[in-house]
Length: 304
Image (cartoon, rainbow, N blue to C red; front, side, top):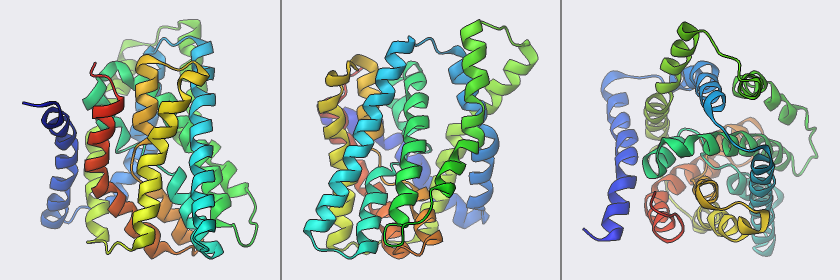
């Protein structure tokens, strides 16, 4: 089997799972919001705590990773802004371009793809990138959603109170001080953490099934291309500049190559910023990522 076939097979398994979950939703009348809330409030904090508690990453490397992925995310926002301005799009469309450019689906799409591609050893780096991208993208996304009226950043700062971020300080502290947790408590957390990726995949399939078949326009193609191609190219180029190489670089490239997140459509809907266009682009970029992620993995990510 050739390399392209191998990479396609490796990528298709997680993608197939969330496509099947769309069928389950139709047959079982599953509620996407229940899956989302369970993942958001319970499973994601357990997963982050379990991973950070066990991960041994040198603090200097963590700081380099943070600066690296922040630069990539800001670069995507700048490219989205410039392209939309060059196309002479109105303010709302410019905001939508920026929103799509920064909000990659690094959670319920990124985690399973990276684990499947690089193995469980990559999850520590994946969690660090996930947390940084979540904060930066949320702040930029809300700012973009208020682009034409200059809204406040209060809603963006609310992300710091999310359950997944609240468990970071105790997890890092326990790791740093090498505090032994009670076996019963740690096993309970690990069981919840192990359920995150399957639940995320099912929830993603249900959400995408609710959207329906997208009708791509020129803007859909362009915005999706910025999300899927500019991110990994920037990550590939900037990694060595920040001293991020090896596994951490590969994870950063993959996280930067993820399709637009459903959360982008939520922000667009709440701020009346072309929600139909954003939702359509989220679904279209997810479908297109089956091709682009295979190419990114084949070209830029070493086979571990």
